[in-house]
Image (cartoon, rainbow, N blue to C red):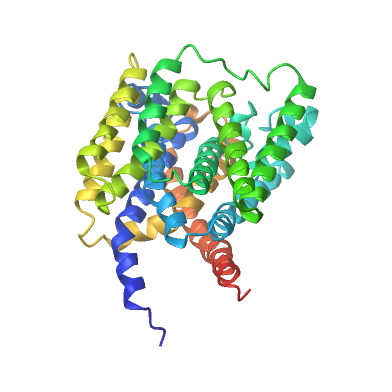
Length: 398
């Protein structure tokens, strides 16, 4: 019989509330995109009062901010952190790309024209997962959030290497102020716009700078390591400041503020900083609501995401329902793969409004059921083996 160490069991139970939030967020995002393909008549009325997609991704960003820096600091190893992150993100990313290839083989024509006219740039941008900060259309619409996740990982790595990783509150304030002041004033796609040659040059430069910086951080010491961290930090901050298109510089910078706010809340919960200091995080949702003025649905989504996260923290010692833990376990698969199933529905029903509502609701239930089944399989046979491989590599047994 397999036995799990008590410390590991306690850690798992302590973090179960984060899994629950991931699961809830993933399911809400699925229904956001289902509106377009199956319930278009409900889409605008719902989004006018509540943006489910933004709610979901903001919950994701808060969870990432809370747990990702803690993962790096707990290990104390940049190498272990990146092995874990890469094997967490890329295997399922590959499955998603394979799914797109299958759709293309079946006759789907949803790829952006740049995939044929700028294939090297687009491929390189997606391999770095920074495509959304390189002014590139995403292979699958939901992939845009991974660019902000990757930017956060890189910034956290740079801060850790420079020894300033404890300054989460400074990150919160810095990105919040930048978001408010930069909204409407910062340039959009300043670096990458201007033709295919320029986009390729920027993609190559960014990939080179990030790779060089990470190499210096991983293999160097002293000033070399610090120089690598500075290169990473400056590169990412430049992209965030002047090379975003969607969701625009203000909202993009606010996303980073949101993740650093999650980190500040973690530090307060752990007693590393006072709750008074962590109280600055209240500026983040207030700034988000101000930036979204005139968009009531977006404002309520931001407020609801924060309320959900704070409620999760308050209830973190309660037992989490198993169904929510399970949804959290497969949430990454749910998030990445659901657009492919919905695109498949569009192949059969290009005009959903001519299809009876009852039949569309039945199809939605079928899509959700199939998605949960596929996600369970990909978690078991793709994500879990990759994570086990990562643990072996980190321990030196692989």
